[in-house]
Image 1 (cartoon, rainbow, N blue to C red):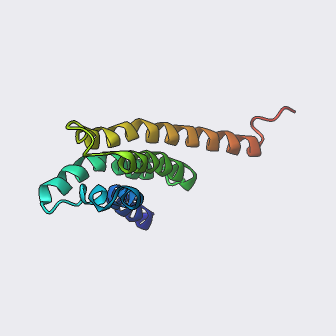
Image 2 (image 1 turned 30 degrees about the vertical axis):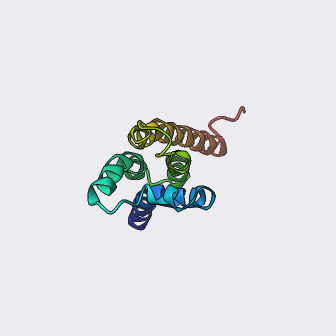
Length: 136
């Protein structure tokens, strides 16, 4: 489980940068280079808020050891973060940088809902196979 948590953290940290690569093929290198600034402050700012998304997934991994709950949670959180960063045009507006803050904030309720839904479905399936929900 420890290796899974480290993998989730590593994926969460590099995901905003990886999500920009396909857009760089379409929009040019400046699309990707907008996230790779030479100063450390930009990276720390991005990762401070991005920690909300991967931190939610890691927290769920501490609450349950069932991978059938952890993977949908990671898919919801990382999917929304990847989509948000892949489609964010920082040069398009002067307020576009604010979206860097809100993308991971929006990912938290999606990840939480995915965790609750996956846990509920897993519990119902286990109850069904244990015979608790069958009529006799």
